[in-house]
Length: 97
Image (cartoon, rainbow, N blue to C red):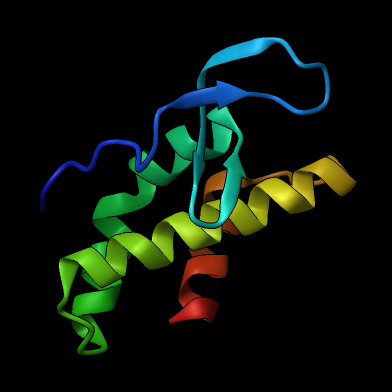
């Protein structure tokens, strides 16, 4: 499974306008650093799941994973009540597929 780099260059966090060198904005919006790291951690499981259901396009699978990361970031912005970030992110990814 290939290791993907961030989709876009580092950006600023809109909340406090201070540069966040480990934050990213992609086509789905801001992705929090801890969510992006979690997406990289679960990538092997996500790609394996995608392959099992017949979604073999790695680029499209990566796109769904980044979309899930952006959605989870939105959830964290509203309420910080996610106890298992990796599990929540993987389930969000599965729901998108």
